[in-house]
Image 1: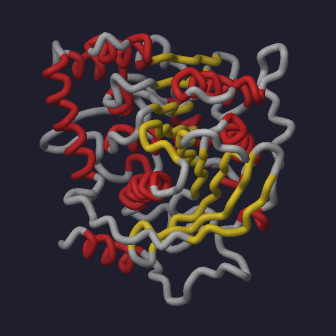
Image 2 (image 1 turned 180 degrees about the horizontal axis):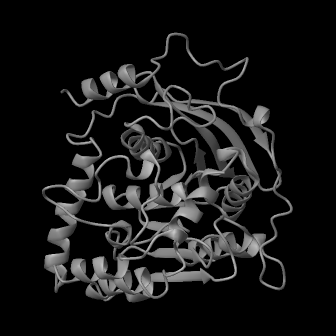
Length: 370
């Protein structure tokens, strides 16, 4: 219900995003000024997110188990430690046959009931794997199996962004993955995670934020705007500006007519495209606007993502396509929570793991040597 309530809140607000974007655009006129500004904003985001200095990257101690083989892809259950004793939980989808190294796609889930277990998450991750990519679907902090901290706690933004950074570390450590082709895509709060991660970690080479890039609404949850990442003494930004920071890497903005992205084609997309023009790369940013659709990562949005990823990552769209050009998701198996659990009777969460805000922050600060 949280995602629905946030849509209502955004639609009731009066937009001032266009004027904010005009002010931001006046702060740079060329590529050198933009790149200098990106450095300032990136530092401001990391500092405001309490990730500066960056924590030490401690051993992941990954646990991979319960391998299942389906029609053209494999699913495994994953847990690793982004900080000592603090777990990231999720599922890894791999192609059944790997000819060369597989591109990587991170799939954060956002504020939808069911989290990583919901059907549309499984549909897109399974299809990505059938196309030839390795996809990783992982819990937001405080959701589903990520139970060491409440999602509403203040440091959730810090830890969620750190988990995504460490997820890249985990994925590039796997055999047969392609560290030069790493994408991130998610909807709603997962869209926020997508453009934040792409803005602060240059290992991301393609991004698809879905129904979230808005210049006048920042999400309303502590994991998106609970810390002052949009404004400090040294920087001012908004979500459209953050999304633009990935230029000139390929980016697809997916928006709809029934939430805060209803103005993306006329407000946010032109701003971001103008930044890409500084790099002579305006052909690498696109906007798929579905005016009759609402706040979701539904089939038409997934179809746009499949086609965009195929364009830049040389995946096998043909292997999952029908003769009419649609994508056939029916071979995908929708699994139960029990089958997908990172922790189960045979693979239990270690005893005495840190629990609660005080313990987790203490671990983080020690990793930052503060």
